[in-house]
Image 1 (tube, rainbow, N blue to C red):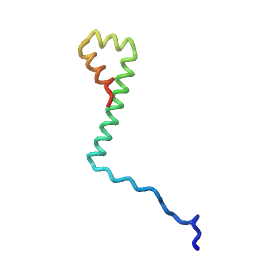
Image 2: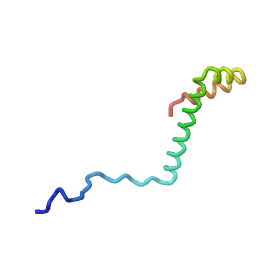
Image 3: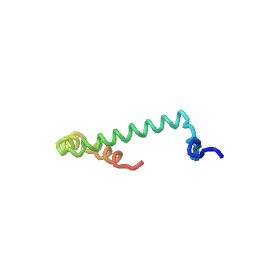
Image 4: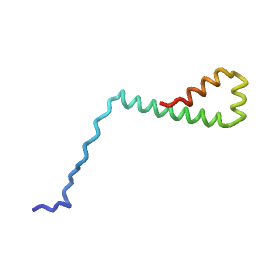
Length: 71
């Protein structure tokens, strides 16, 4: 009987390969999330937020809606 402890057997199924389109989508989603985090960090600063509102309130509101929208 062979020594079972020395067998290199994987019981997990390998992950299916992602298509180039799927990899690109993941990269873009990751970049989008980083941009959203950056925008949120800017708007948490009251001085930046106030200036953004003064310059163009409608665009500020639209930006905040986009940033706060869930995926």
